Length: 230
Image (cartoon, rainbow, N blue to C red; front, side):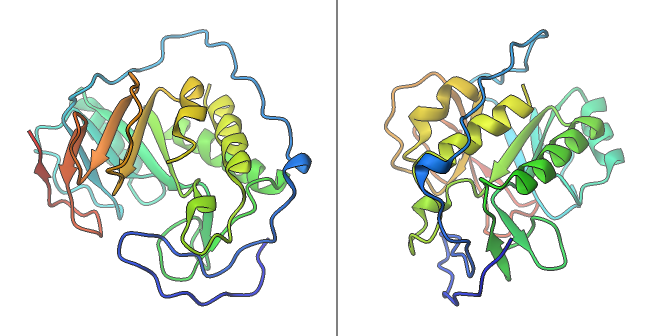
């Protein structure tokens, strides 16, 4: 699924890929599936919800007065997720839906590779990860790195491919493409994104910038340290 490496020095606020598959013409994209009709109530966070994000597998700040915890999908023990839920809190499970790292599935920055999100094989793997998150008790998903088209070196797929992929993932779970995917997302997690100017009702969990969002200040490795913006 990977091509030769393209060494690029990573920037502090931008994930810079070091490998990418050749882009597929837009007309070869699979038709985005229509979202499945929901048969049960979907959790909807309210604007201003207090939240915490801690990745890496260890959630050491369970005493933080947050109602939503964003944790690592792979490395966080199921027992921790159960503890969070036992405290009547919601758990959002983070995973990288657009990249893969050698030796460790869809995780980390160094040695990271963009995936061909149009590939049926990649989508099958992501489907299995969504099912795993459901089985582990995650209340929602935070699929990262789906905007590789907007990376500074422009090696990634097109915006149309990213929108198609978001529709695919939204159906599996029941930036500039923000408005195009609003019909299939219930809320949004972003970081380093001060330029969103859409007048929308979608709930936004935002890191480091505040414009009426549920914003927290974090350091780059997303450990327990947090400074909520109130």
